[in-house]
Structures are given as C-alpha cells and as structure tokens.
Amino acid sequence: MALQSSGFILELRQLDSLRPHEETIPAHVDDLARDCAREGVQKDPVLADTRTGSVLDGMHRLEAFKRMGLRNVVCCSLDYGSGATTISRWGRVYSGPSWEGLARLAKDSGLTRELTPQSAVKELSVKGAGVAVMNGDVAMMPEGRMGLDGGFGIVRRLDGGAEARGMRRTFVSEDELQAELRDRQKVVLLVEKLDKADVVEAANTGNLFPCKTSMHAVDPRPVAVNIPLEEIRSGRSARLDAMARQPGGRILPPSSVYEGRRYKERLLLLGAR
Image 1 (cartoon, rainbow, N blue to C red):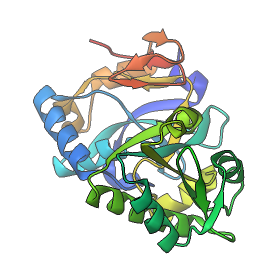
Image 2: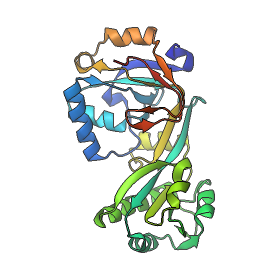
Image 3: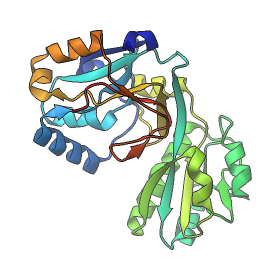
C-alpha cells in the first residue's frame, strides 16, 4: 500500500515549519525525550497538515525533539481537508471522592444550569455550548452560549482544582464516556463539538487548546517507522526515503492496541522491528 494512494507523504520536516494546536503535559514530554534518547529512534511519525503545518497528532513528540535540540522530525503530511482524517474529542475523567468540591468550582466558573448528563452530551454536539461537568446524577453547563475560549478556561480551572484536591485525571474518547458516567466517584468533563477549522485557527494563532482535547483518526494511520535519531539530525534518511517510495508494512485492524493505546482506525506498521 503506497502512502501517496491515501494522500499521505512520509518525510522529514523542520520543526519550525510545524504548528501545534494543543498544549502539552510537561511530565509526558520529559518521558518521551528520555525514551527517545535511550532508544535512539523516532518510533512514530508526527501527523500534520501539508498546507498549513498544523500538527494533528504528536504535540508531545514535537516538544520533546525541541528539548533534545533536534531541528527535524519524521512527519506524515496529509490533506487535513480530506475525508481520510476525522476529528472527535477526548473527555476528561477525574477520579476521587470530590464531586462536591469540583461542582462548587464549576458553579463559581459560571456553570450554573443543571440538567441530566444525557441532555448535556446532546447539547455539546452544537457549537457555542461551551463545556459540561458531569457525574452519573447531574450535569452542569452555562446558562447561555459560551465560546471555546470560555470553555477552555473552565477546563484549565477544573484541571487545577482536581490536582489541588488530589484527584487523578485520565482521558477517555467521547464514545466511551457513558461507562465513566455510571461511576459516582468520577467526574467527567467534555467540551463542545470541535471542527477542523478550530484546530487550524489554534495552530495559526498560537491560542492553543488545553492538552488532550481533540482526537484525530487517520485511516490507515502510519506508525512504527523507527528512524534513527542520527539520520533525523543529519536531515537525510535513505531508510525513510525508501519507506516513502515503497512503504509496504503490515496492516492491523481497527481497535488494535499499539504501544498501550487502542486505536479506532487501521494501523499501518511501516518499519516494525
């Protein structure tokens, strides 16, 4: 299967040509930088829009490479406007017996309207709904319309409040949130529906989303390139060039687990060792 047949180009791109659209988690960046230095390879390509340089997946890899002093990164460049790439949302799940404390914080942040979680999830499919904070019994949302900036401000405030209360934060895809809502010891936060224009605007302006807000699926998703850092540092990789011309590789079906994460789309393992 040629990458070009799916509209993808596998290449080395300069870091300063790429624009992230989300913030990163510092501890995760540190872990990635340490792992990459120890293993001596870049395992998976960064996914980015060919035209705008907007990074769709790989914000932490990008930041880790910057910290390591690298100027280039293996990138899968694609046409973000095509139907091969879709966007959805990550939901935040805060675990611990502190619903009341987060509920007060949400109310103080302007989420004063109470409704059922099912109604809240439905409202969040419309632009301007902002954000909802939910558990199995009740959801809290703003009284009127709220833009993404307002919603993102509440996300950051709830992140800080949960951390201060010793709560654990995890991330779950939006289609898996119903199971989390059944647990009364968990608080779920979800932002309104996102679209590709939101992502490109954030990348262009530098007004970044909070970490782990958007989720992009690319079918098939190229992974496992395993290009040595020495070649990336030099700006030339014969192995990458050969892989781009005749990628080959092995296809894994949807819902496969790779590197500890389950992916909805098919995976194309290009250079698995």
